[in-house]
Image (cartoon, rainbow, N blue to C red):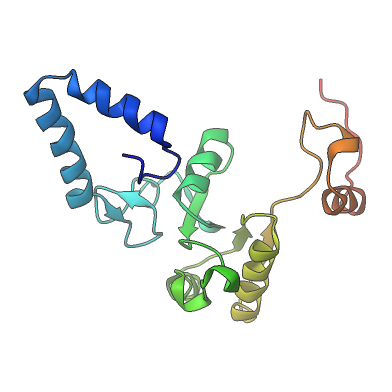
Length: 189
């Protein structure tokens, strides 16, 4: 259990003790659920999101804006953006970001299929929604260079001081970008 990410020795012990108190049929059902997950859940053939179908429910949804693709690092980013209930386009999951320090190169990522999607479909906008880190910015730049012949709009998430954060605790890069990318003040009624 402690080999799972985010599960320390104490949590692993609590989980094992909890499982030991369950019936054999409950343990069998629990184990079978993991086997079925591994067997039947795989990346969407179109975007790379996880799905129990060949094409995920987001990609086949006719109510989604198929002219917009939001490029994300992994499935957790899709879940976070979907939780906002504001983005109505499609996604493309890269499966990571370029990180030479971690041995992750562009060839390790789902980039070729993104370029293919852009060229084969009527895409009007690409949104780079990658982490605001050196690696995320490097990946954004790499994608931008690979897509230099793309006629549509390429945008990134705006960056700045998050709601609830005090200015004195924000880092210098965030503050700098917040000042440079400031927007008109609007009163919300």
